[in-house]
Image 1 (cartoon, rainbow, N blue to C red):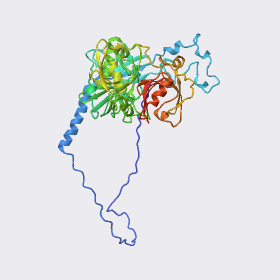
Image 2: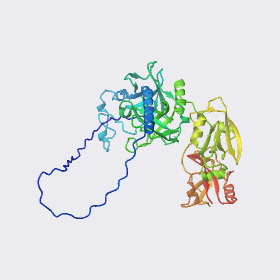
Image 3: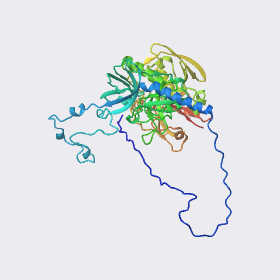
Image 4: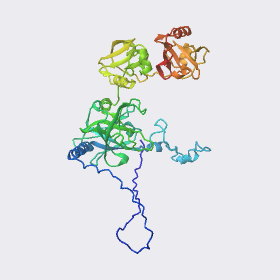
Length: 516
């Protein structure tokens, strides 16, 4: 996280001051012709609003008192976190003779020549730790959740190495003794040598939080002292594409740069989220902020404190949402579950007997309507404890049992992305060719069953449905197709002209509906 200097600007606007003297003549004016035009009718003005009633005032004061109580209870647990960069990297990269000026300029003769000074390449925005060690510190926020010295914050506040300094509300400074991070959720745990003199905030149950609830965001925006802003929960279960695992609480409580890692608190003084991101064009708050739910933060932090890593279970399927078009084909209501598009071999899903086209409607006690909900529920499954899974297959409810397994580090479903050459054959506005083992390997697929789309006609139904060259059609109307003949027969046998295709690509598997 970059460090930004805070600038306070005071704008003094001098407005012209007009003094009107009425009933006082400074000098006599000559007589002029009297205007006998009738005066305009008097303007009817609305009656003034009635004064606030005692009952209304009591309600307002009660809300104010609730905000004060939250601030008094939680602010002592809010900390500022500074990530001070390790400057030893520059020294280590100096020339062997100690004079970095002797290092040749690799950018000489290019527009970047002036950027290379004294033999050193400056860090630029966007450079990742893989390109160069992080050399710029940052300031963020955090919240103490245990007086032994456990502080919750964001991964992006402490990432990149360096020395992490924690500044408490009463002015003390602690150097972190351990820092554990989980980039997939942007959650980090900072451990300091604490004691009972520290104040800890209570983690609440984020699942009980509802849209419209009052919340308070606390932190150190722009490096200032602890501040408090209020708002409501605007939405839940948000995914905005900044982390691999997202289930954000959205709020209109002001979350500004520097608030990252600070707590989002309900009116009971319980932490129900960790402030993480804002939606902004200019860098400031635009009324849309996002926080990691406390239940997810608790699950991650418990594992980080216990072992320094996060262990996630996995199922071994490719999935997609159930759209309105898919719902009728799969026998469920829209958003009535999550469709399975592929079952990977030698995975828990394969052992359970999952099939492409199954719709997962319930995982354990959780009803799932989106892939995000299913993924989070699966990953939190405790190893060694079985979980009941309810699916819909061919319109019928089927019960399965899941035995959680830890996800292997190399588990992935992507591969090479080279596209094959096709053999012309018109059908539904597409050209297809048989899928051979070599072509499947080029496409990064483990299977060689299906036909490959080599061309899509512009404006055709296939194009409107989202088909593109390089996709492999594995099923037509829930029937496997391995050859060109099977594909043609399946298409011709369709009665109403609407096709449900299971397609595979470098992005995974999904169902596509081609309307009749």
